[in-house]
Length: 260
Image (cartoon, rainbow, N blue to C red):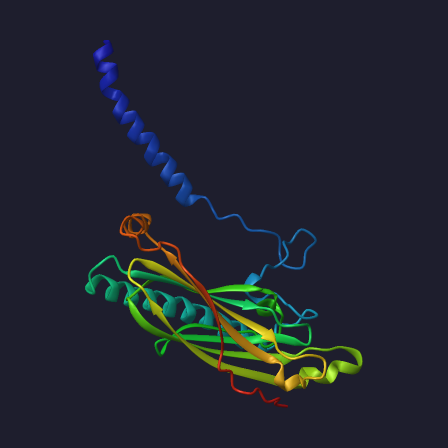
């Protein structure tokens, strides 16, 4: 038999071997493990139903609260995206080089208060919301970014709602039964070609003799920066100052009242 004839049979042999392997794989019985309860039986794995408290499933209220926190986080992301899109749209349609704003919350409260709820709105539209009734994760964040992005030049109003829980141990454990709510607002002007930075500080006002319910307060600190270096250079060439000023504006906080 010549070499050419042998080569003709190679594809036929390959196809035949492939079909034989497939037939054997279909005919082979699926391996079965040892019966349940035998020493070699694998332990059951149920990750989605893993016990969390003493071998029992987590209570329904804990699972619902976890789900609620996830929903709040998604809502917060949606609000931020919606606000940024709206501001960018206004900046683009308004023409010019636009303006920019950065808003942050700074927690400077003492140990007698625990931050449990924080809500911000810009021009009546909610842009941030976070609630933490049971843990101190929110309170541990000393600086929280509320908003950062383009904004239409002109006047804008920031509204804030801050809620604290009393925090105490031992003879002061009764403080945990109280809530303190502070509401405030502030109007600022976003200048075209500049960035406005606003820090809202939550702090304790007064002194030792001030009642606990009168201590929570907020203060708005505004700082205007030149956003675009080219604009700063043009302003300097024209004799206009390119730097900016800083102003601290106390918030118009409503008097907090403790709630049991």
